[in-house]
Length: 346
Ligand SMILES: C[S@@+](CC[C@H](N)C(=O)[O-])C[C@H]1O[C@@H](n2cnc3c(N)ncnc32)[C@H](O)[C@@H]1O
Image (cartoon, rainbow, N blue to C red; front, side, top):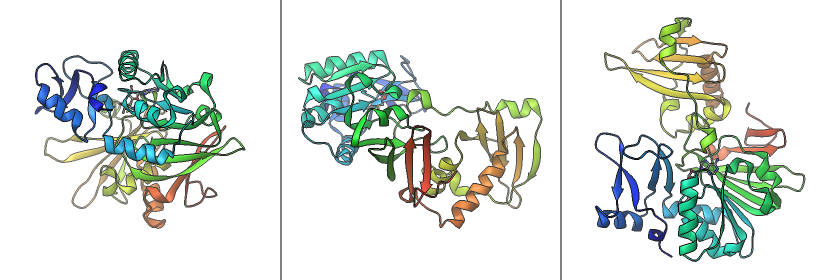
């Protein structure tokens, strides 16, 4: 089977100006084919369906080596019933169909146009898997129970529906990410007979977020307009928290649900680092200086205080990376722990 059979004629590549621009097969067939045959992720939709230019990739065919690694981690075998959340092009569903039999694969895609493309491509390639247009957060109870569930978009809040629709001993594999760490770290949960699921994180991967669980920011202009803030000097400046995919960022993201970050550039070239919590409208801003770091905080959540406390906890815990953390899902929700399920972190 060839990935080309699943890739739409228009894909998206980064232009020089920071926008994503379309690459059309009929205009540059060689580049399109090179991309299909490469081990790169291929962006197939931007901004939930923009036509000319885009900022944010919203659907893609993942890098083939990452798909292989995830299918290995899923530990899937002939005849198992599998649910995939995030159909995208349909290529991964076809790979699953090759292993378990197409009649055992159900795949759910939230975007109707993408789902139609995948349905057509899967049929054309001879894989009659069931493609459902819908929100994968509710799973697909009609074909449950599943021996395996694989999610190909990053998840912040693991829905209990996936546990409920799994067999005892089943496995649920997903990239899990927080709002501070949106890309994700692979997480494999084992479903137990008591109706809970538990597992550990392994390694960082880069996936787009489930549509309904995307981070939401407090608009940055609000701090200036409202002028209602407390000012102080920061105890610490946790530089590693603001580095992409650092261990500190993962740990703090797990401890501070709902907290997003960003940075704005000041006229003198320095950057102000910003945290926000959309639910409560709280925000914090810090401009690192050579000596003191000034902090402003607004709202019921004192986000910089929370960040400082969590950072100190991470240092005291020996700077743990994702592999020391795990997650348990019960009907009451998800719980993240460090080293042992008896030590929840928040
Ligand atoms: C990285 S792509 C999936 C790649 C795909 N498995 C493949 O082989 O091409 C992630 C997909 O998840 C879809 N998605 C996002 N939120 C979703 C949701 N709540 N339910 C189902 N699909 C969702 C996106 O529209 C996107 O097509």
